[in-house]
Length: 300
Image (cartoon, rainbow, N blue to C red):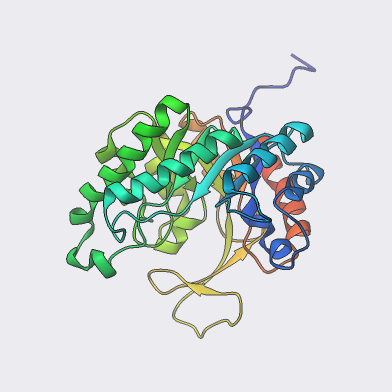
């Protein structure tokens, strides 16, 4: 009927931003973690996520988390995810690394974040040199992830790994880890761009893990063949030797809208956080990216 908007499959998706996207400002001391909430809201985001909250200015990490939650409630901008590093292969023990992450889960609870992302491993090396392939590492990674998610579940916090860090970045490896953990509270943070770091086509890779998505990062990359000369500052190599550089959402070669459609078709209805790591001014990049991402969602 005329005047009635057709409900789209991605209608319940909302646009958020990772605090990591403001690294330029943080590096220059131009914005505190607390001030990022107002900046994100001013750009037009509907939520924010935080990475690695640490002690500062005489306050503990827990006290800083409490201040962030207070400000987010004051601004009406929820904190929807907390992301931290982890490495179950290279830690002194799986149990010790899990215990450290229990404390991070408690920080996520203070933030009011319903989800927490932690890494699985950076790969073989150091104490992990005894492993020679992913199949050997998988039971160790699954044990650690299971311990963390079992701790987090009664607190109402879903846990997940991201396709991140080269070693555990392929969609097949991410899916295998989720299956090996085998816990309903555990899934994956699907980063649309990060699959290119493992030289996977993003739309195909997203399709392989969409059913396990608990959170999503929208990321774009410029891509150049590794057969050519190094492009210079700002570029890094994929695992297969291609050149990548962070881009504004919509300016690079990640099929962001197509990937969002794959997620929506799989039933994903959560937040989509921009994680910008390009060379452009981050505030301008996030404004453009937010507008583009919202348009893509509206047109799925």
